[in-house]
Image (cartoon, rainbow, N blue to C red):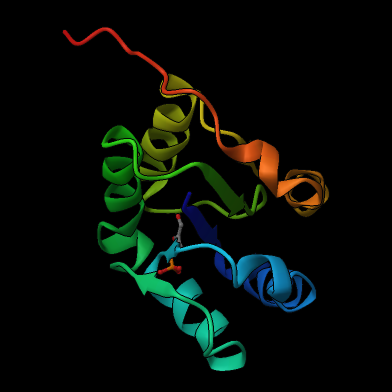
Length: 133
Ligand SMILES: O=C(CO)COP(=O)(O)O
């Protein structure tokens, strides 16, 4: 099981706080994060098995989407900023779309993420089959 962690700039502090509070759970899983989000998390929790991908606007969101398509991500925690326009909005949409296509549990805000991690053993789902075009 692997988790993906992403946060927009206005939500990064909240993501770091969230990770601190759930460090004991997060330590149990391989983690992937977009570049800046991952860097900030690792600054405070260097013990995590976290792989940093590219920064979101430079392809990191798409890399996580690719991992989802490959069946390597079991859940996505993405703290989205709904109030700031972003140049890479299409990447954000593509990532959340793939999480829907592959039926990955996806938390887009903190309260949902709390629910998602409340029972992490339930996150491992049977393999989802998606018709290949
Ligand atoms: O922009 C992001 C998600 O769309 C996050 O990317 P960073 O973690 O590199 O800031």
